[in-house]
Each structure stands twice: as structure tokens, then as C-alpha cells.
Image (cartoon, rainbow, N blue to C red; front, side, top):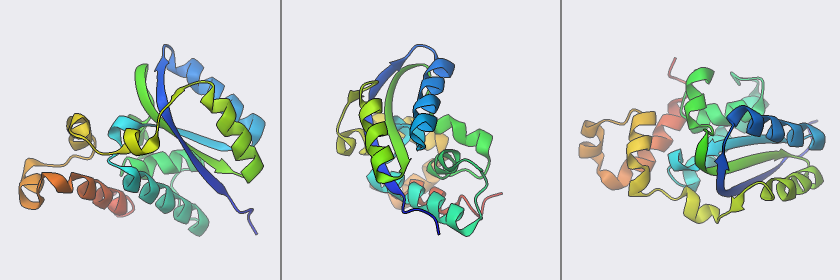
Length: 176
């Protein structure tokens, strides 16, 4: 029986001068604390529902043994990007320069708590409700990443863009 996993989300801003170095730090914190940490570009998240839906889908895939990625963090990233291909899902990850980011943490409660406080020291923390909310400034990046067409927007309306993103996440399993 697998341990009950705690899921925590931490949002903020950070300037990453060197991505490989930053990712090494995150990986070290993760392995020290036996926690999965996945960093995502918050500017490509179309609302809290998008994130929670993607995390839920990833955890269910792992539980069912239908996951594509061995690493739970990569599986979360894959669903968040609505992608079947792992390589293509990296576009929703962190990048060099200024990042609005969200860390998804998975693990045992105490380990997650420790990790959370360590990660807080690396970023300028911001409320997730603000950082993850869909806004017009995210529109271009999201339409491009999720390949949402003008025809789709015309058919469903501008306000349904977050819904179209969730649809892509739901279809990530089916699209080869």
C-alpha cells in the first residue's frame, strides 16, 4: 500500500540566470527530502483548475500504471502541457530569466513541509490565486502552447480559453 501523498503548491517569482544550476539545486532539495518537486511556468497555466486537473490526471495515471514518464514530476508536467510526448511538455517548464513559477510538491506530509520552507527561500512568494489565474497577458503563450485556433475561440468565446486548455489536458492520454 503506497503512503498517503501530500500535495502542496508554492507560487512565486524568481530570476534564473542559469537553468541547469537552478534545476540541480531543486533536484538536490527534492532528493534530500524524498519529495517530488516539479516547477512549472505559471504564465502558461490557465487557472488553478488547470493545474489541479493536470496533477489529478497525472496521479491517477501513476496509480493505474498508465503513466508515460517514470518520474511523477515529469508526468505532472506532461499533463499540465496537455502533451503525450515528454520532450514537448518541457515547454511548460521553467526557463532562464524572469519566471513566474509554481512548484508542485508530492511526498509525505513532514517532508513536504520541510521542502516547502526551503523552496520559499529561493523565490519571491506570491499568492497562487493571483499567479495562476488566467489573464489576457497569458493569452498568446497559452494559445501557442495548447495550439488553440482562432476558429475554436470564435466558436466557444474568449472566456472559454481556460476550458479549452482543460480539454487538452483531458485529451493528453488519447492524442498520440
